[in-house]
Length: 177
Image (cartoon, rainbow, N blue to C red; front, side, top):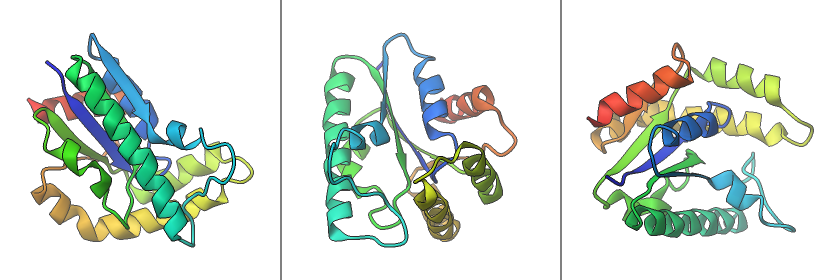
């Protein structure tokens, strides 16, 4: 059975690690990190941070729509597709709207404590990544107010604060059964 998962959350919450582990549970699967698509931009890439421009929104839209197109192609070929992307407080990931209508589509929000995300970011930070700390704060500010709405919209909320990657994947799989 083909499935599509969208794993979203703040920066540094383990989206890529969890998405890769989740995809690994299936015989035919594909993990699509949206960040990898965005790093294909050789010149002119913009990153979220304290300022949000129309050009940044356009770059995010292009990446997300490209990922969604790719996901549909693999899904139709019988693959389980796992997309990982950051929660975008501006669009609320509306660029994936036509994926949300697919049978077998599951929306998952990785939502450990903000403190855990900040600590993890400090451990993995590289020069030039200062925008990520601002992104964590902005995403949690948005999500803390939006969790009840996301639950009503069918999002699986996975608090991975006290779960390792395998336990988080098990939790997600338990929620879709």
